[in-house]
Amino acid sequence: MLTKLLFNNASNLNSTKAHFGLLLLRLFAGLSMAFAHGTGKIPPNEQFVGFLEMLGLPMAIMFAWMAGLAEFVGGILIALGLLTRPAALSLIITMAVAAFLAHATDPFQKKEMSLLYFFIYLAILLMGPGKYSVDSKIIVK
Image (cartoon, rainbow, N blue to C red; front, side):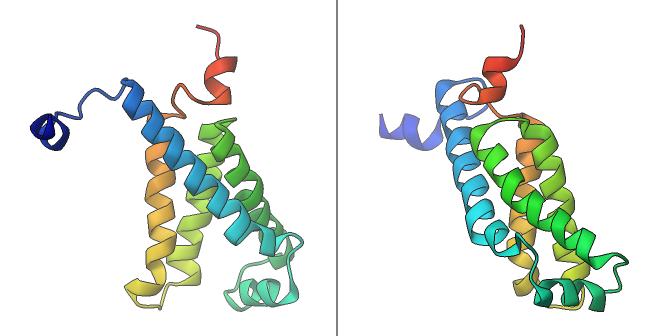
């Protein structure tokens, strides 16, 4: 039993355990993005807009809204498993901007959170939402 638990081949990505793991990943990554990061950016505050202007982004207010909506709405959609791949793509782009533009000159420790989210959403984009999602109930098979 213990050997099977520790060394079992995890290649069956269509197992109930894999789908449950994906659900847990989506719930945590989606809700933490929405409520820890997105809520503080809707509506965008002057400090965030000023930071985007300092980075040289044109129409900083528009990009501030896009980031806030991607983080809040995208996070909720990821958690629900609704429009999962488009939501993941919007968050991948947002996290790439955060890691490679906003934290371009920062040490890795400052980029780490953005990069973690980037790769989590990339995995979700590639694997899809799993069977415990709204998307899986909508898709006609």
